[in-house]
Amino acid sequence: MIAQKHLLVIRLSAMGDVAMTVPVLSALQKQYPDVQVTVLTRDFFKPIFSQLPNVKVYVADVKGKHKGVFGLRRLYKELEALKIDAVADLHNVLRSNILKAYFRLGGFHYAQIDKGRAEKKALTSLNNKVFKPLKTTHQRYAEVFEALGFPLNLENVAFIPKQVLSEKAEKLLEFEKGKCIGIAPFAAFEGKMYPLDLTEQVVSQLSQTNKILLFGGGQKERKQLEAWEKQFSNTVSIVGKITFAEELDLISNLNIMLAMDSGNAHLASLFGVPTVTLWGVTHPYAGFYPFGQDIENALLANREKFPLIPTSVYGNKMPDGYSEAMRTILPEDILRKINAILEK
Image 1 (cartoon, rainbow, N blue to C red):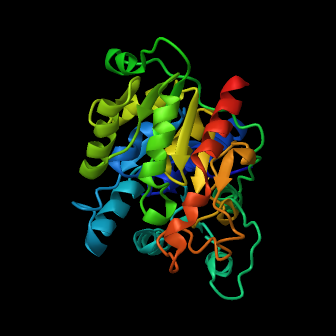
Image 2 (spheres, rainbow, N blue to C red):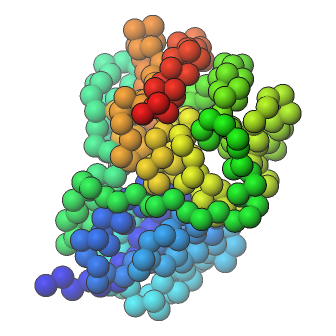
């Protein structure tokens, strides 16, 4: 008999990592329907969990009242009042480690993700690289729940169904011919970003026969996407036009998503939207491939020309000359892959 009935799940950032918790929590709920889950995360990410029954979100105000050691102590007391039975720490950073100390002093069962830092260091090493596939992040998340007494089967996890659109989002989706393609051309680091001049070629070609929705954030990204919106027909930047919740609904209605090794790829995968991903100095072997996606939909930089790939897990380390790695993924390769998927 499993004693724990109310689990606290900690995952504060980043968006892709937060999104990757959803299939695991979906499996947990299907296999243990009596278990209540409270997710500790940032306010912006709340809509990601809106389709999961028995999941509530508790907001960590890490820049305000929950900042620092004393703020985390306050947060612990707030969480303790929720009558938590055990804690699944899917983050394993300084903040969650401070919370771990509080919870363990309080007598709570606390399980923490093993991020496989040594394995990832070997995979991304520039010398004596050990190039082999590692556990997926989803598997690592599942191991945390197993440590709490909830072994999970991640096969046949149901995708979130297509969502009903708000009137504002529906207008953005309107198109007369072809398919609706989402394109998310940005990533946190340059090493994971397809060159914008080549992306422009892809947008130019696809927009001739399809509706293109451009995803991104931040002022610099917004200006670039709005420039393409003006330049190409059937192309709309959604930045600043709808809420994040509406954006997720919109993603669920796409026919296909083109994204980097980034958060938007993981968001699209939650809905089972076919997603073509472009990989520069990172690699799927590190374990961050979008859930449920065909590995054939990953287009990789040429490792024969750039044998040190992956040079980092996050795309923030590029040896000299490796800024050109993604140019080995040709626009025609991307177009061929997208059109083949759409024809299915």
